Amino acid sequence: MGRLRLRRPCGAAEMFSAGVVALAGLVLVVRMANAATHSLKEAWPALLGLVLLSGAVAAWRFGQAAATRRRDRVRLATLRITLAAVDAMDDRHFEHALRDLLIRDGWPARRVGGGGDQAADVIGDHPQRGRIVVQAKHTRVGGKVGSSVMYTVKGTAGPAHKAHHAVVVTNGTFTRDAMAWGDRHGVHWVDREKLRRWAENGAALHELLGLSSRSRTSRFKRAA
Image (cartoon, rainbow, N blue to C red; front, side, top):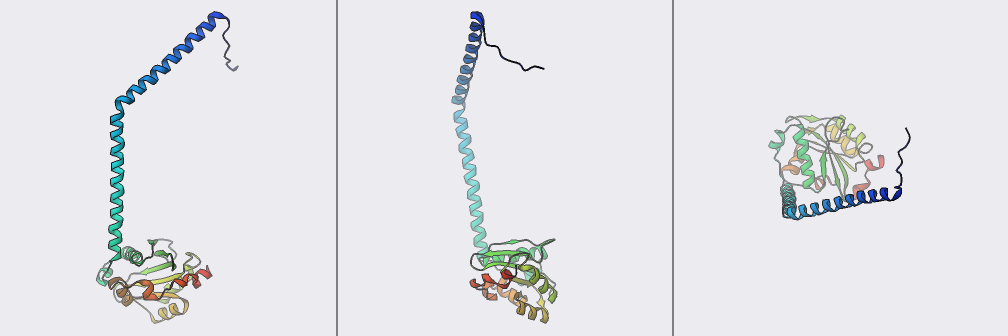
């Protein structure tokens, strides 16, 4: 099929007809513009009210979110968790509690526990002390954590998570071998007594474990 081509008007009659069509189109455009302007004049109070209402709703939501953040900061700043409350938790709630305790101590932290977590249930990043990886081991009272957990955390803290500090936390206890191995290889451990001081008494974790700001060049980082 050939391409349709527009033919230039020829003769006075065709020129006159084209002019009439163009004028009619121009009149239609002007009338439509006038109608739109008139409609806008009629509707502008409602539009203005809608804009003001939307702004007020957005401001209210922003204020509510800011107030919630302030309440969360105040709550976390004074957070205390008793060992009895910890013992009543399940694994997931225990991980959330450790995250909140890290935030209280100045470590912006997130829970990452779950399938494929590579021995990191909570990760926190401190502006001066670097990254901390926490492995949570919630047990029934009297339960013990063995050396195998220490081996796993040591193997993943640097290579998988680029951590400067690695900590295993339990509401139970550690075997003697696990504590000795952790002390030798830089895997910190928090047993029931240390957890009491951290969660219940309000001691900061970095003070409890002696994590100085100069630890950013830890063996985990170098091993990564």
